[in-house]
Length: 138
Image 1: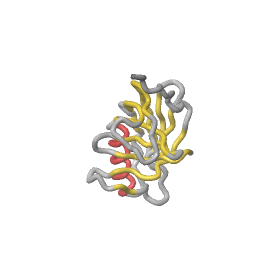
Image 2: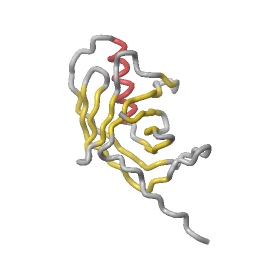
Image 3: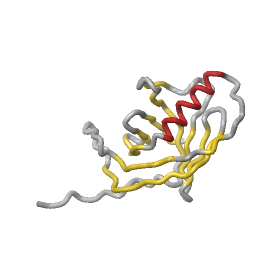
Image 4: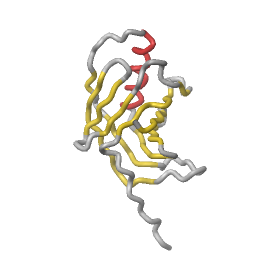
């Protein structure tokens, strides 16, 4: 019996992303509020930085284990590679819109949940048992 070929993980370090949609605590998917931009940048030094649409954040990230590539039409729980993000330091500016403050909490909770990451159809997907976030390249 032959072992499956190992696949190199796509390069995450040095990439920048903008949220296309993300899951709410209820599990429903939503888009960022109009006029706000949720970003995520993976540094080559093991740190992430980004914007919640109101505040900026920074913290460590770490990936572990082998990378299981996304296969079109065959999504499974092992897709991607394990990732841990945080703890995140966040600036404390008051957001102009109350909805942006709620969005900020939801987005940061999704990032802090960790889970797995993979690239599918050119998008970065971060997912855990309870969260899901899709990013477009920045």
